[in-house]
Image 1 (cartoon, one colour):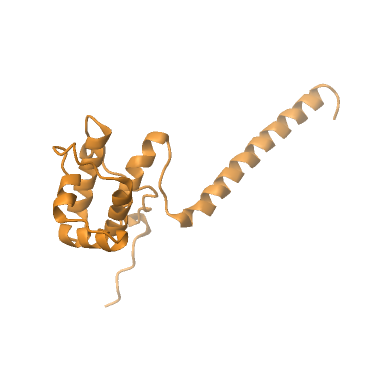
Image 2 (spheres, rainbow, N blue to C red):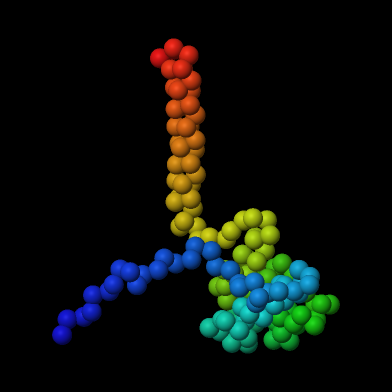
Length: 149
């Protein structure tokens, strides 16, 4: 029996931006939102918390304990927010791009894979070309109306 031909209509494009669902990271303060994001990233990771702490330690070259990791993920531990270097180590250890997106989104930015950058630049160039074409066409219409063409 021949393998089933995939249906093109079943395909959905990948999301270019990975983000937490708003309800997952809801919090009264930025620190609370970050703690919730850390918690979700830890829960969703293919690694255990112990493995993540070990991976963070190896990447940083300093000890990150399981207790510290748990404190970073706790909204109740407002006195123990995760620092930037540890946050970056967490991103590296989990591979969870949503953590970076949480920081970029309030500024209207997005965290995307670098391989998409040329496509975005091409789209920006296309927009500029369209704008120049509109301006050229408007000037041509004006010139015709004034008898210049």
